[in-house]
Length: 211
Image 1 (cartoon, rainbow, N blue to C red):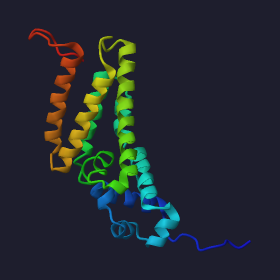
Image 2 (tube, rainbow, N blue to C red):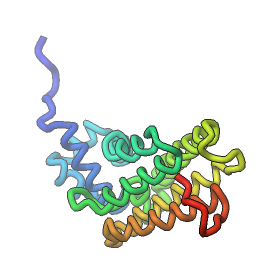
Image 3 (cartoon, rainbow, N blue to C red):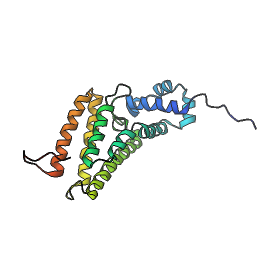
Image 4 (cartoon, rainbow, N blue to C red):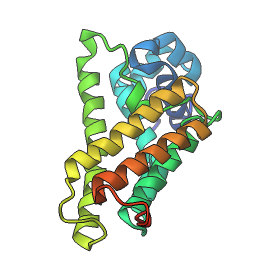
């Protein structure tokens, strides 16, 4: 039987990657349909036929971002080292990836909601849920460290996880503003010093730094 309808004349995966980069660079509101279709190499009817709506396209782009750009920090966080080493590895990864000139700067999930208008509340809620999942992942790693004994039982997993994610989100904003890897590494240095104080309390000059 002959196939009904015209076959798509574009590579959906390539088009989605290009859409993701537009959203990453300009945010949800700033990514116009003109910019999206131009980057994707398709017209508006083809975009709607393939993805349904701008919001659906954005959600697909975030999913792609999480399964590609999100794999490095996720692997670092879930590595075999101590909780401290894993958290630091995740933040160091951000310090290198956020300013990488090969991609738009910063983090799509952190920055794409900037300037959301009331009619885009659904997108804002969606991004907030994505960011909350980041907190959940870090909190899970902290709880694991506490259960395995490399963190004290007195540690507060939720507060500590929210602190770590707040640092990562701030790094994304500073990268968008032009901060270099060296400058972001300086933030990580400060964050890990704060981690030591939060987890182990103040130490004397003769005590070694925790690992």
